[in-house]
Length: 83
Image (cartoon, rainbow, N blue to C red; front, side, top):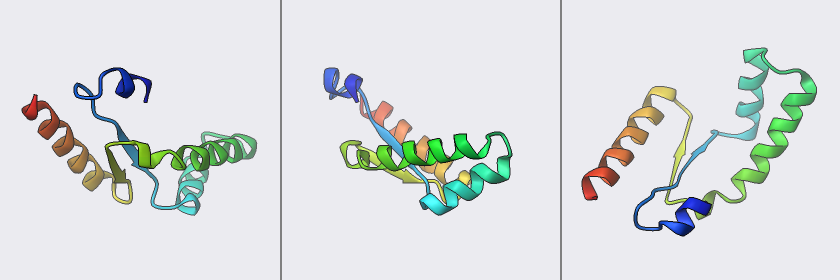
């Protein structure tokens, strides 16, 4: 967001949103890369970050990875083509 403030017309801020906190927690547990304490920490951080999602130019809900990636690529291409 600091970069966005410095270069409002030359940057795009895209927030990748989990479908829900419950789904995020489920995904983190399924990965088995974090212990329970770190998962709780990441969930708390995600909740805090989501509160600021309205400050971003675009929000992509990552409910399907391939669809989210397509949306992300389209947004970036549109932004770069506009420049």
